Image 1 (spheres, each protein chain N blue to C red):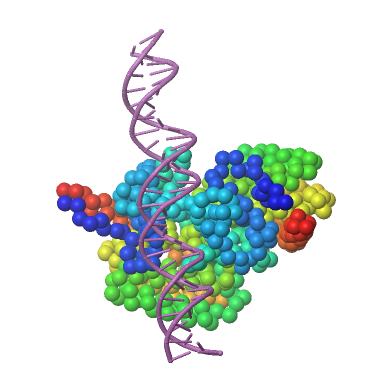
Image 2 (image 1 turned 30 degrees about the vertical axis):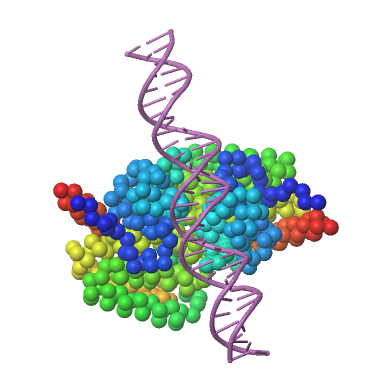
Length: 243
Length: 243
DNA sequence: TGAAGTATACTTGTATACAAGTATTATAAC
DNA sequence: GTTATAATACTTGTATACAAGTATACTTCA
């Protein structure tokens, strides 16, 4: 009846991760995908039983998720916050804020090496699309933006990114998995947009950069829709399994 | 010979804190004040012995400090990063970024209540100065900025703030303690600047806001100097104790 | 003397135990 | 039936134990 648990988070990304990290990643995916509804109260002991680990890694995971605003640690139990449309927009506010700042630094730097790296990632993304590998595509997409941020060597911008990254990653993963199934044609636009971004950095063209960022931002609505879509797909799957 | 340990972090701020939080706060102060030099390798076991607690709260503290960029968790031992002038400037980059964003939201909102709250805090600050209470002044200063950020109800901006806050707090604490001793006259300017900030919010005056933020930013140099001053004061104290 | 391997003393991550505190529920008194 | 009190079943935070891994230092052999 109950098969060995299937995980939402790509297991190959967890090769060297601790049990705590694994739990955090999986819980995050379950929260963002809506599998765990917001408002749910998580208990350390129950989670420990569910994931078949002790309370130590669970505690670690809950601390991580709390710092990402996924849950709220209260006196008794951890309350799931999750992502509403408002929160997703907020995440993109932050991304916009960071990347605008980063671009202003980049225009004062030598970006040859960065552009080269980004081009490589860009190629990788195209391959991932060709082979319909949503997880790989997501990985490269996240890496693309992280690479840009790392380029300016700003430890506190990186700190913000590190806080935002896990949620972004999960969001992108879920969104891309849904799109690969239902809106494959979207990827042409996404790839073009990344091309635009590289071009903006190469030519130090603020206007182009703003346009590309904006276009990316407009994708938010898409992402939100995909998320709901992905949530429905998942809940359908669960229902089918239950039968 | 060795007296009961004296802590840098105000103990009354820790009334309800766990052992892990206490350790994190104290270590943070020691790192930022330069008492623990950057490059130092911290061992869980040694820290546990020093603070007379078990490894559990120490682990918690190290995780917290790592997420704040105070230390870097490596395979063996936690390496202290600390704050150079570069990092302090970076922190202010982030504060500038956040508060500019927040202001843009504020001008579209009803700020009556906020202005009222800020005025209260402002009065508190003046009292703290009058009674030469550096810790209380720092508390109100941090609260001032947190109140502004909270006003726009943006969970991810708040997340960034929460990440930045502990370091800012320590920085301000050390700086203010030094100034109360050596540059008491500075506080006139600081108070005026906060007044300007409130006025900018009340009148929705972008120019004023930028000016006030900038002035605050110019204080950074001062803060850095105070930090080095505070470090010297502390190390002198240690030397004297050692004799 | 130098290189290779082994021992040891550390490290982290996880499990488990326990104390102290807090909701919930059941019971008893009115 | 309602309220007050007590029992219980949870919760968190901390301590401790242990397994597995890694750097350091030491020994042994060439």
